Image (spheres, rainbow, N blue to C red):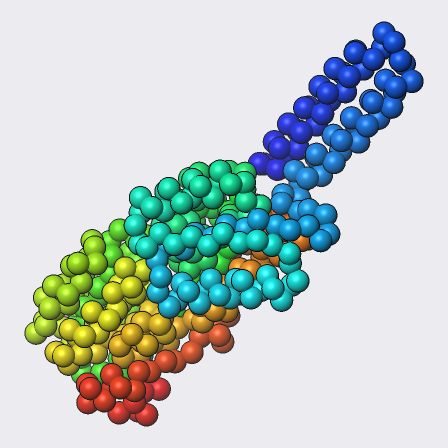
Length: 347
């Protein structure tokens, strides 16, 4: 619908130019009027074509790409790296404006506004709050998102299979069910699981709901605990001591950025932490069965090439998901030893 509106508007504007030019020239130089009319009609066709293809330019043109990353932590960093690598592998000529909001929601809004004002040809938003900030600023510039669990649930698209607007990208929906089953295999006698996440992140709320369903299916009780800012992380983990046998942390940006604190307190108290992604395991969590964020970012970069170089319509581009086969088991051997668990026994 957005494309048709733009095309119609472009044709009407060009048509108005034709009438104006013809009226001005008809009194003196009829031959030039005909030429001007033909040129204006050609311009209208080109404008309409540009509206249909979005940000596509002539071959060899340099594109302006803006990036808004919510916060610096390994998963989002890898998604960013994968995105850039895909652009390079495609031989795309571009200049990129990398921006990081350091986890600050108000900074997200400010940065998003700046990226739109700079008239980038495409904007990449990494993580749900960043994506929501950019999407709220423009309905014209193509926006690709990544590390967003459910774009539709986050209000970014009309449908994940057919977005219907200027937003598409890739989802980092992790195999939550399989992660809880992994916990069951590692700790078959566990009774209660603490499900810890930030209630401010819609992606985390969704994953927490899936985790609680999986806990029930595997015979676990669960304790739902949330944090509203990073300063609460230590206290919240300490509050679980003596109450839970394990902790589950989804792909939550606030928890991921503070994972060193989570793991320090949990490991000191012999509480295994099952994580949503491997970067959290590297930061001290016990294990995960999760997606590769580098590959997720690479997939998003390929979408960018399709939009910029091939003129693909973003409103018809489905949200991308990594194949289940790209998920992998990751175990922190040092953490396992600290907890008295044989890392080789985790499968």
